[in-house]
Image (cartoon, rainbow, N blue to C red):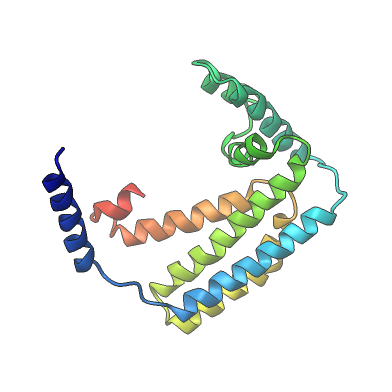
Length: 193
């Protein structure tokens, strides 16, 4: 590739970039993101001070995440089969969401990282509720819907436990959002998401 081809490629990129829409600051989305970050900070604060031990189903999910950590440290062709057979009657997606944190930071604070994962999923759910309600309501009403969901006692209770309810809620909200945005699978961009 010679210098004229590089310059032409850069020029085409710059020209295309000018045609794209400019970023517009949305104060309502900013409020929802700040609210989500405040709740996330509260979850991190709770997780750092918590001396709670996993109980009931939490033990299964933490055991699965620890086993996935051990499997993914030395991946092989049979890793998928091993992951699916750790505890065969439990779904593996939630512990797989915790596993990247364990791969980065180790097993020493695994319960903390599971609660942090819950906090991230809860923040994503609140933003998803805002975007979903924005399709049908005004922006101010959408912010109110997101804040009401964020302060609702039932999801807040599950937020501080390592259960799949927080992940399921996030996936349901985002699935409904993308289903509506895809116009019942007519718009391919949102269908693939």
